[in-house]
Length: 332
Length: 295
Image 1: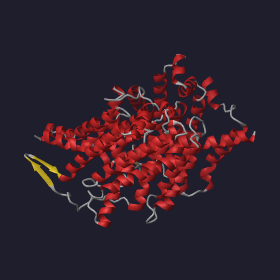
Image 2: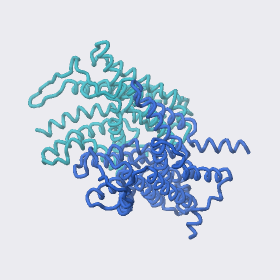
Image 3: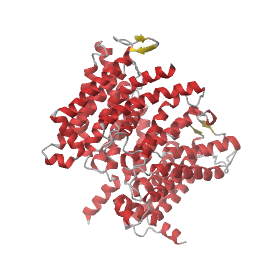
Image 4: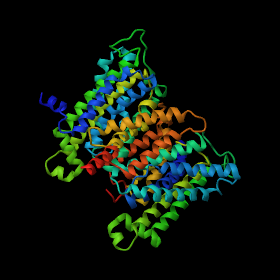
């Protein structure tokens, strides 16, 4: 009960932030009735999905300060569990998604135990390596469709058990619900014991250790929480896209995008991943559809995207939220 | 027999891998930064030789200095225009920054040259092979191995015998102490990037003789280079040489083992998986690498 209260309690934020949250929530609820086109709805769903990913990454990457660049493997685990169980045994989404989360968490413990012996660059590259190994395996494993991927069976009628709907609006509300669960969870998380321990570890590992914090165990816990978040998103991706392959679920660029959105928005803040996703997902999508398709301009969308990453990391490593806070401090 | 052949081929590839990884380890040693864009320097080195060959009909071997110069310029440009500013930020921003550079160069190449796979089809050595007893070597690979060895030796000599090289090593041992001795850190950083870019650019020039050039080719080689650098010990130059050889042999011999056992699962698809796994195991079990002194 206490935890629930903590999760719903936003009172330590400034008034402007709380008003912003309310306006944003009203917008989210009302969005399907605005009558936006299907493209915009897709972008909104992507935005919510990546906010979910980013919030997960924020536990280990933001609060814990570990440069984690292998989240895509958990997207893969989540989506493959849902897809394979549905194809092989017709297991409903609501059963297979929790199983996917369990597998992801179990796997993250196995991987995390050796992984968190490492620090800094070593750690960052090792996370990439583990993700690429998993992708290579799935790319060549015929039982799970290899590089061709798997198609999910399409039902004739909308089916809540298998999360198959005719309209994107249902998917939109579903991912929105997940988004709010994640948001409340993160609001609790940042005030939890683990949250404080992680921030301590980020600031000074030696000091944290001398205070009796088990650094490695804390990191592993945060890592598995992050993996669970990402696996949920992966499960959603499977039922939403109805088709998954290693390239779309386990690619290195997906890992990078997840971490990047959180960092661009502002790591270690509750709003950071949301702001980052709100900025990057539409940019990515609109640049892609305007510029990417035009002849002779292939790649220019990603060039702009990359230039943005470079500028932000060179001039404002604390992200967009860092800029906003700077202005606010100047205002007072 | 099969194994002996794979061993020799692996050594040739390993020499090239060592040259690719050399710049990464120098840069890491001097300024503690991991350059994700390293593979893209390689890619642009490959393209520079390719275009020199296509438009000016310069033989790929003679065009080699072009790729080295392109690499040096690229290294210097990225240092002065970008990396310098990145150094002020935290480590995470540095990682993302060089990652951004990597993406930028990848898509810049795609924008300019399209995503086509390109390969040199005419040149002094292209398509010719040398048979020594039962072994057959491609001349291109042989040249790549030997020239890599020479380039590595030159850089090794430069770092250990010349004054600038010694200053560079001093900076990588202890940046602050070096700056008290009157060594200009900023200049050393720039030199490290020039060496890094130059060697990897040249490696690209050698590689394009027998490997496709395409915008995304870098990521594969940068992962191999990471494995070599980790195996040799981050910042160790002697280490990266032997690590390069080892990775080269590993990558060649692994599919042979798979073939001998008759297992499909150990096929050539997985030869780079082995490299990734090797990296993971090395850094976990022995984080300082084989010859490392930084931890």
